[in-house]
Length: 244
Image (cartoon, rainbow, N blue to C red; front, side):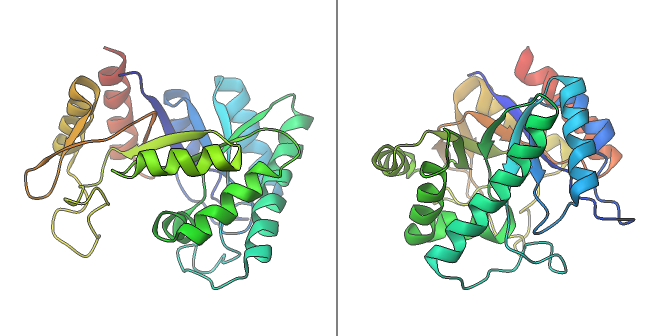
């Protein structure tokens, strides 16, 4: 299995710093860059794009709900028209900023509550797919890999877009293929369990669920987090694992 590494970056805002972007960027393949609604600002976006260019990293838009205080982790009840507009607005912002540096935006990965809503609600997912399909040029949608991958592929085909299926390196999976709720014990893996999960995924295309069941998941890209040095060090080891 050939896996790419992706990471959420560009989430600092003004004098407030989030993440260790400079340390992470050399070790990943895909950068999901905040577009200003849940995090990020124009200067942070510009600098993050420059770092991606320097390191040869593929660029993705990371749109979220307009919720800086809640870091985009609180769901919002918005109309389909409003959701579509806010997604396209954010894609266009990073697409234009990227073009000024000679870069091309490749994909879209919704952030936080928008991502969760997309996976839980077929109508939200359909709206986001429509927003991407109606964009003036092709971009790919990144979403969570679940046992419903074939259904999601059919939805994407009907919308006229392509998908990237994402697996999480540091999260435990429930028996239904969803991420185990963070409120439950063991929801976030230790470093050793994280590395074991990545190795199993690469070699067997499976993950072991919280109850010990083996779950086969389609995977194109692996999400890693680097908001502390332990995380950055883990990213380097994961890189070695998937390239071995």
